[in-house]
Length: 191
Image (tube, one colour):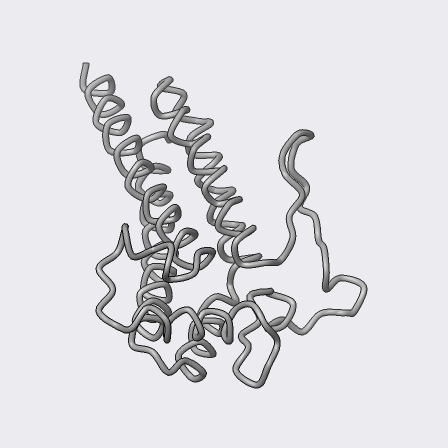
């Protein structure tokens, strides 16, 4: 009976935590893929929308002196042939992984959605396996996010993008710590 109650607690916590983490990834993707004029209905933006739209274009769209590359290959020391695309050894049918920031966020969302379904189905071993995949991807393929955030903070003129980069960096650090804690805790429950 005690093990059953612990599994129920694990199910509720795992499912709820996956739901919450998934929302954060959705919000960050929306904030980085949309110009501020499209965000004003979702986010309370205190700065001038026209100026922020120019800032968005300068930082993320049009190459210029202030452009911030959203690709991990700009922050990694890799051979040229590995720069544009790299694959992980995942099962057939899963998406091919590019090193663009938004693709990375999408892939994490994909993994978390699958994890959430496994918690819902009470398939704890598969859920924990997906947590390991998330940790591996976050550390192995998105480890350059702090450098991206630092570059955004150096090149932006707006408080909006400065704070957004700071929040993303804090979220990345929290995710690393959270996944480590979850996996250590789950290992104790499952073993």
